[in-house]
Image (cartoon, rainbow, N blue to C red; front, side, top):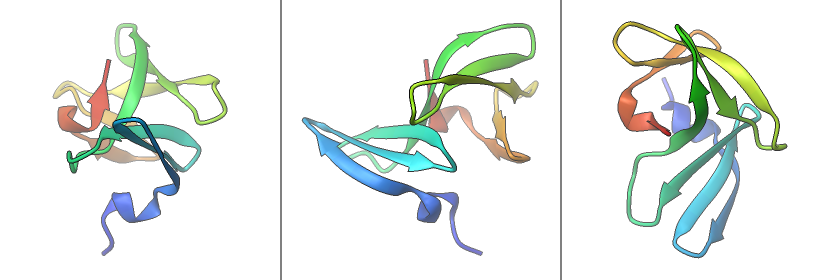
Length: 82
């Protein structure tokens, strides 16, 4: 099974950051860091706003272990940034 990062497309380097797209979501990482991260814009009780590549924000669930859930896949705290 391929890692989820194999699905990241449109990777561009901007200064000291790599940015890309995962299933329409904006992801980024600092150059030299292997962890791609989703960008969280804000939180409510059990979900959060996640930045899409087109600049819009979509609501996604966060579970009791602080894992972001996108399309049924759970991403640890290492893979999101607020």
